[in-house]
Image (cartoon, rainbow, N blue to C red):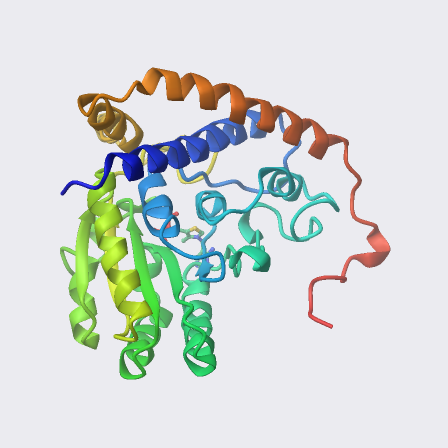
Length: 320
Ligand SMILES: Cc1ncc(C[n+]2csc(CCOP(=O)(O)OP(=O)(O)O)c2C)c(N)n1
């Protein structure tokens, strides 16, 4: 599957931006002053970018505990995201959320969610709102293979199907739910098979192949946009890093971890671009400086910025 060189190069830049962000988060987390647990999106970049680069700003997404990549791909700005990671008032959620609860309604990000599967029903509700208002928006929900075994997915797929809601279900199957292998916990070879049980088209995509991911997302988004109802994409890739930053993965063999790292979408896309004549080294240098500089100032500013006032602990937690 070939997509235009321009699209591939643009998407590579977006994926690299996420990778640079996450690598920095991993390093900075090690310093010990970032509160809570952090789960990075390393290795899954093609999924967020393949989908979100084809959405409008007004389209809506729901995300997971591993949500930085979704936010960045949907246009959320780096500095207030980093301030949120540090729990500061300048953060997107005024520091009330942290890594696992970043939301930015102005960009259509209805929230990361620490409840596994928690975003699925919200996206279906958002799709119902769009259908009722006839405003042409679509909703996308990202969730993991672990979340695929949650009841809410099945109720959501059924409702989305009978009402032909403009929603795309995107299962990010990295082979693991914390320390539980998908091969143990999922009753079918491919989660996408389950979509047929709800008369929803389901496809399996190799998420280390950017072009394949882009094309699958394009078809599903178009179908939703045209009013033809939901689709299900199972994007498969091997988990390259621990479940959370600091996870030693004692439950996983060295060989498995090594082979996962060899199937990296950034490296694969780089080779594809080079074979089509692009000077990728120049892009890597350019973005390294540009995003590196942006990250330097975002992390410095976040660490220097003010904590929320304890008297306002409950502000922004509930709507007025
Ligand atoms: C309802 C619920 N059950 C359990 C947990 C604890 N937990 C956090 S992440 C996780 C694994 C999720 O796996 P998956 O959905 O495959 O996403 P991944 O971390 O692999 O991206 C679990 C069990 C939780 N946060 N919420």
